[in-house]
Image (tube, rainbow, N blue to C red; front, side, top):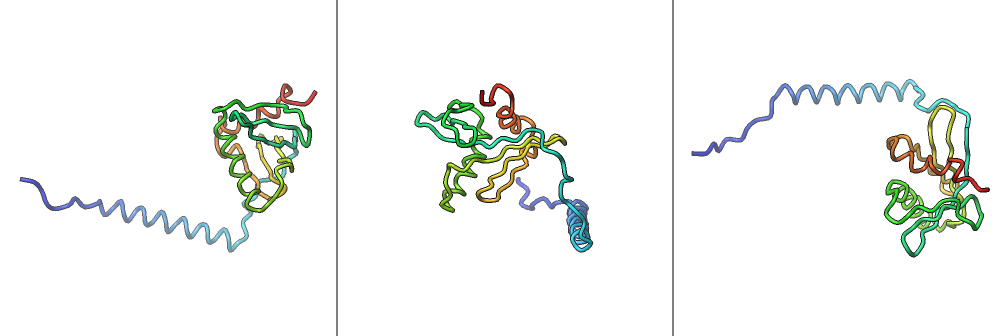
Length: 150
């Protein structure tokens, strides 16, 4: 014989979850009303590069320094999925807004360890380390000496 009555979720867990949600909302509201700063403190740029990314017919991505015509790096087909997905998202926004793909993105390594990618054409800003060290490393490689123009 089977039990036709459904099991109930523990009441204490529900009350605890509701309390945490309420406390979070109160804390967020208080911070907003008091004008608490949530910005990252100022830091100095260590390395700044303006880069363009171009898909090739074979599935690679050529990376160019500024407006140069010679790639400083080639992302092979299937490699660096995070880099590809990030750039695809930024490129789609540019396409929707009819912004030229020739305008470079700005990749910056900061003294405090942050790594950022800015699309100065659209105003989008990406804190790359927020996606983890492995994902940020895909972009950090573009700042290494072997990927600098000669």
